[in-house]
Image 1 (tube, rainbow, N blue to C red):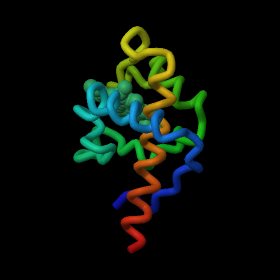
Image 2: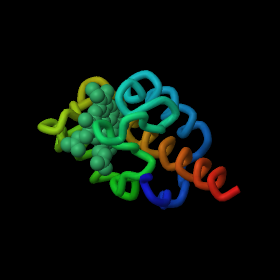
Image 3: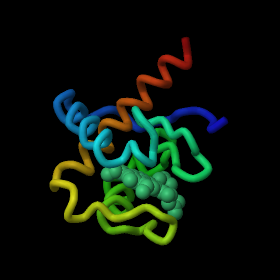
Image 4: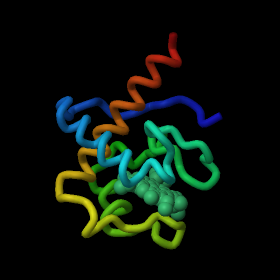
Length: 105
Ligand code: HEC
């Protein structure tokens, strides 16, 4: 069990979230799991639970600056368009909210 989902508030519009979903599906889901749900949390963190969701800087530091390269998380600098990391973050935040609501039912 990963404990409770506690995502930050959703601030992005639905277009941004849809774009994030698309990019996530193309580039991130192979490791972090389809629909933002990791199949192997021991190896690939379930991003819905990441504390980095709350911080644009902390997210950017991993996804673009390669802070966790040593742990197997490649940098996507040069692969992602400028707005993509934030769109993906928005998508995962939205996913976490949807899944938390589903779990509460
Ligand atoms: C080749 C596999 C792989 C791909 C593809 C991948 N990741 Fe990762 N990612 C990892 C691994 C492994 C870690 C754990 C690194 C660590 O903790 O040292 C990680 C960690 C992260 C973290 C930090 C999570 C936390 O809070 O600990 C974020 C954020 C992240 N990835 C975002 C992304 C995004 C966004 C994409 C797509 C653009 C992506 N990753 C694609 C393997 C991958």
